[in-house]
Image (cartoon, rainbow, N blue to C red; front, side, top):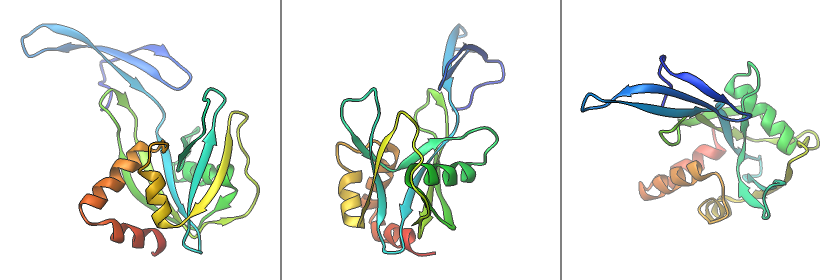
Length: 185
């Protein structure tokens, strides 16, 4: 959901800003509505020339256990979303790709003005070492499609938006088509 023009910013945070506005209700009364806003972000499904998908096992200082997910990150400065995706791929894995495709855009929930751009980065190759932030411990794990599906639909996978997408493809009988899309142009 997008923030209305008449909304006022009432809080500025590190990740989220909070906006409020008067909203006329169906019965004619007025209530204060509120939305959060954050920078748009990316998530990446990265494939390699040997038909593997890169999954991350991550740990952050405020979390006791590690978790699995695909690469992700937030837009910085005036980056395009594709520039954000390329930067995050290089920083978090040390890999680069010349074959990019925007898979989908989604806006999770109705209380935050936020869009996630999901890209496929095909034929990625490691070109340097990881360059992680001080609060990141990331292990890159290459795996085949079957193992990817098992982890991506399991309880310790944090890229929930992608999990729902994969399950929809499964129930629509389009998972094989998706697998082909990951590894071919």
